[in-house]
Image 1 (cartoon, helix red, strand yellow):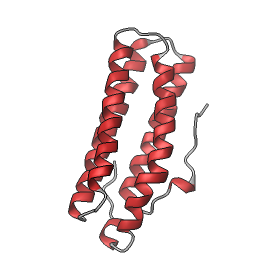
Image 2 (tube, helix red, strand yellow):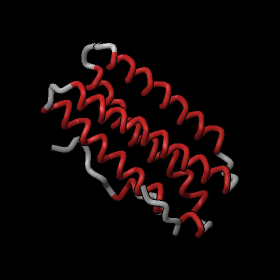
Image 3 (tube, helix red, strand yellow):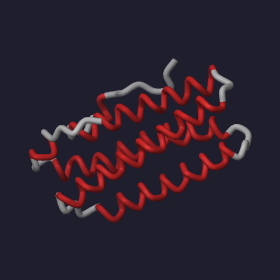
Length: 142
């Protein structure tokens, strides 16, 4: 069962970022499935840790692209990333401490944030990069 499916409205036309976003959707769905069908806290911790690490990796790649292209919205975009990382880190700590329902909170938070961030902030970045073919055609898979 999936919480969300990749949808072409999330496509930015920047290969590396689109691949990363697809991976984030996959990890979100894996987290959701574990939340629904598993009581194994170690499995959940493992997928949440992978999600956290991949999110940091993705953000670092995006920031590098923004720096290289001299993106004018860098400061705002990075601040959104930092807020997200702080909130996710806090939720992860709450989960590890045994707080109830944190896995559900994490899934809802990630689903909501991923959609809003891609459709608002990442779309702005894609528009900015649209006349820079070195980014549109860029590889750099996962």
